[in-house]
Structures are given as C-alpha cells and as structure tokens.
Image 1 (cartoon, rainbow, N blue to C red):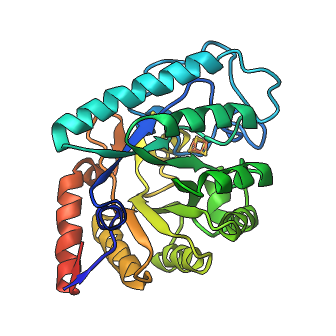
Image 2 (image 1 turned 120 degrees about the vertical axis):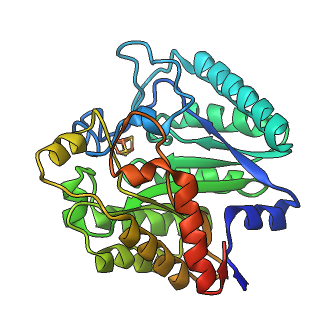
Length: 318
Ligand code: SF4
C-alpha cells in the first residue's frame, strides 16, 4: 500500500510529532472583494463566519484595514485577540490530543490585506508564542505584494511559512460566475512570484463550482501541479444560507455536485499528484443549520470513510 503525503505524515517527518493548526481571526481584516476595491458582495459562496469559528468579536463599526491604511488604532487589541485565541485553542488541543507543536493559521478574510507594519507585528507576535513552529497565512493572489513576499521569505529562514491561496478554479468563466474579483492570470502571476522565493504554497480548490465538468476540475489540479505548489486543500462546493449562492440555488440557477462525482474527482486528483505534494484536506463538513445544500456535506466522517475506502482499492493509504 502506498502512503499518501498527508499533513500528518509531512509534519511528523519534519518535526517528529503532530503539528496542529490554530485558526485565528483578527478584527478589522477584510478582503478587497468585500470592501469594494475589486468587487462588492464577495465570492458568491462567502459567509465568512462559516470559515471562522474563532470570530467572536466583531470589528468596531467602520474599522476595516486595507494596505493603504495610514493608522491602525486597533493594533493593540488585535495583538491581544491573537494571543487569547492562540492560548485558548492551544490549551484545548493539548488537552484533547496532547498537542505539542503548533502552526498559527491566519484564516479569515485576506490576511495580507493590511499595512505591512500591522502584518509584521501580528506575524512576529504569533511566532513568539511557545511551541509555534510556523505560520500559515490565508490570502488572495490580488492581496499580496513583492514587499510582503520578501518579508515572508526572511521569516522562512528559520520558520515554517505557508501562504495559502484560494485558487478555486483555473477557468476565468468560473471565477466570474462566483464573483471572485480576480483573474486566473493574476493567480498564476502571484503564485509564481511566491514560488520564485521558495515559499511554501498551499492551493485551495473547490469541486462542483457552477458549470464545471470533472475535466475542468482536474485541469485546475494539473495547473496547480505545473505551478509547483506544495500542498492542496480540496472541498466540494457547498452552499450556506445567507449567501448570494443560496439565492442562485433557490432560483434554480446552479446545481450542486453529487457525492459520487466529488469522491471520484478527489481520488483522481490524488492519483495525479506527485508524491511530494502534501494533501491537507479532502472534504469539508458543515454540521450545522447554516448548510443549505448538498446535504451529504453535513457528514465529514462519512465522506472521509468513503474516500479512504476508494483510495484503498487503488492501493493508496490516506
Ligand atoms: S476571498 Fe475569501 S473573504 Fe473574500 S469574499 Fe472570497 S471567500 Fe470571502
């Protein structure tokens, strides 16, 4: 049986133990697709709280950062928030799993969409916490700069630094359909610039986006491999209530992917990947009332079980 390079195997080999990601959500961060810089309303599937279990504090009204913000009067609060979220989750993970090492995961919104001084303060604070081996920074390819990449390159000399980009699809027609607000060309340009600095890139792909065939989904995998990304995260398109996509779905304008097609696409993806590309996630489970469709996305455990079974028949151990 051939072992797939999962995040668990990657980190155990590199650090000698499991490394746990601690998701962080910082007040005042937004994204250019929400604040009107490139588009309004955000990606059609975006209901940000669904990605941000730690988002318990709302930003004070009208306080949102962008890269041109001259002042950041909330920096002290942001640093305190970072520390309290990290400590809380670290304690929970240590108790539940005996976790000893951590990656601070800046997850919500676009975590490079702020003045560089703010980013430096937050990232360096995160790296100063005990038992933190690195950072994972979720962002968009239109929200990064050469200056930020140069700075991350410096940090990566002795820390594990990951840049997580939402790729979603390598078809412009699909990015337009989900109101992504940037082009495939922009994505290729900035992933290449990130890789040119030898930073680690994790790409997110969504299967089942409007009007995508399996061939198109797998084209996104091929393009990601050609871009030399280091890791992939996969999940199916799922629709949560209170999103633009929910309205489109209710009006019959879009359909969701079947579980069979999703699993088949995941398995085909894994078979395509070179052995050094790490897989960080192969499904998502939305086990609460926010999920509108498809309902099979509710049960992550069942999805994992089925994916593992099919992979096993292919001689692959997840
Ligand atoms: S890039 Fe992320 S935060 Fe911004 S609109 Fe899309 S899903 Fe939401």
